[in-house]
Amino acid sequence: MKLSSKFVPIILLIAVSNSYAGSKTVAPSHGINYPIGWQNWSTIAVSHRTDNNTSRVILGNNIAVEAARSGKTNPWPNGSILGKVVWKDTELKDWKAATVPDEFVHAEFMFKNSDKYKESYGWGWARWVGLEQKPFEKGMQVCISCHTPVENMDWVYTHSAKFPE
Amino acid sequence: MKLSSKFVPIILLIAVSNSYAGSKTVAPSHGINYPIGWQNWSTIAVSHRTDNNTSRVILGNNIAVEAARSGKTNPWPNGSILGKVVWKDTELKDWKAATVPDEFVHAEFMFKNSDKYKESYGWGWARWVGLEQKPFEKGMQVCISCHTPVENMDWVYTHSAKFPE
Image (cartoon, rainbow over all chains, first blue to last red):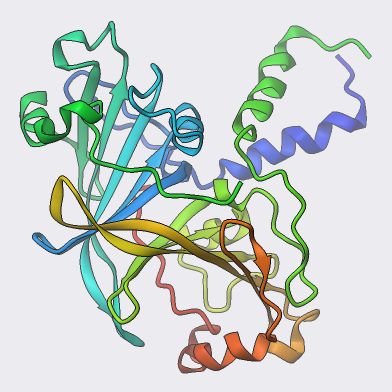
């Protein structure tokens, strides 16, 4: 098939925007496949926990980000994937009052599918640990227990940060 | 022109992934055009400032994120755009030890072009304030003064957060 030159830039753009995406093979966590490319997802919120000295960014796939930006998150739509990326804290050398990421701890995810994950409150719960992304396999109940205080927020702690339209 | 069905999903994907991108017209700041779509850029780092009680995410365009993930940021490559998105802090209701975004403050950007912005240390400095994204017009020197302590880091405070490959 011959393409008109009009379409070439679009195809090249896709290649460029994924050139830094994760490419290695990572084993499933709790039977859930690794969400390839999450490193490039858009931001839903950030958080800083002073109880365990960690900095976090909460990312989402397209369905989740669109829901977050339009405030339609209780419940989150099926197909949403939320990712929480966690780093140990450190003080920024050149601005002492700023706390910033140091060592990478883990990335943990919630996969919304109200049918498939009916037994775990509509979500698949998974985590990959360390820069080597070792699958967490201690069971979804570990995740669910901690999220029980927010069961009336569709089990999600994160409030979507406000962004200009 | 007739397209084979192979290309239809690719074109649709582009439409979906930009459907929550900023679309309104925003005036330039310091003569620099508004970087349309920054709300969907990927993450470079986060920070929490305890001196002015703000939470931040540092985002980048494709060139900047690729440089950040591969550690080639001193100097940052021409074409890099760094965005710092700032919110006032609040305590997460359901997890008191977590500090999270409240009111949106502003989004500020550094545009790298060592020729075009030779007079301002290789960067164009811009800021848009509030959810209405009102251009900041008090001069680049306001931005530069604050960044002088990191002139040997190509004028950038942010250390790129570690991400799994």
